[in-house]
Amino acid sequence: MTSRADAHARRVLVVDDHEAWRRAVLSMLRTYSSWDIVGEAADGVEALQKVETLAPGLILMDVMLPRMNGIESAKHILARNPAPKVLFMSTHASWDVAEAALTTGAHGYVIKGDAGLQLMRAMEIVAGGGRFVSPRLGGRSVEQRLDERTDQASRFHEMVVGSDEGCLVERYALFAQTAFDAGEPFVLMTSDRRIAGVDRLLQSRGVDIDGARQRGRYVSMNVNYGLATCMVDGWPDETRVWSASTSLFMKAACRLKTDRRRVAACGDCSPLLLRHGKPDAAIHLEQLWDDWARTFDIRVLCGYSTPGVEHAGAFQRICEIHSAVHRS
Image (cartoon, rainbow, N blue to C red):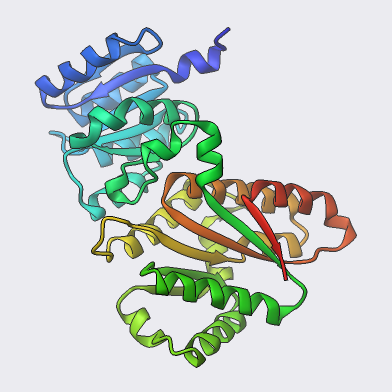
């Protein structure tokens, strides 16, 4: 039996100024009885009005709209009520446009040229609370996400438990070097001390750290700064985490000239929360990182020290969230 919440999530509002495209999308949706089409709009202002009166659970939103573009419309809609899920559909395959759209709090972005293969799957994922980004913009492929078991097995969100500082620095440096060798940009969010240690190891192994940073292929930042951008009242805010991580990913991935837009990232945000006695916040943030790893073609490695007995239960839950756990 479908719950009331599930039924509401499948109430669809289609917003697009091109009538032929709007008609085509509506026609496609009508072939699936599971979707409840509640209305349509031809511009951003009308979209705001329809959302208020029709209460859709899912909004299919074009980017380029008259009177108010889709990005501004989504900002207004989600500022008033964050409950509806916004899935952008656009002809734009621009990284800048996609980043601006996704950082509104939207749950997905589908390039119209790929909609025949991706739109219905994207709608299912977004209506279910997940996120979807077209593979041409660095998202994981539809094939990777068609089956829950395949989706689970193909994501890369691992953790390493280090016996001391030197072990964690070594594992981060090895992870970074593997990324550079594969042509993947590398993002490192940890303490200044650990960043310096990783840099020294990489330089000793012949990696041009300065050149990688100048080309945008190596991004490092202090973990406290990273946490400050995504926490509200001591709790990881989903919209802020999504916006910050998406911007980081897209700025790194857009520099790649190949079809494979994979990025590697190491971070200590959740481990820091755990060390500061905030186990629930650490678990929640790891769940958000896991959602990010499911959405984008990204390899994530989190570094932990062995926790005290007071956090043993939380630490076990954190281990379960990751796709693999390594001990050094």
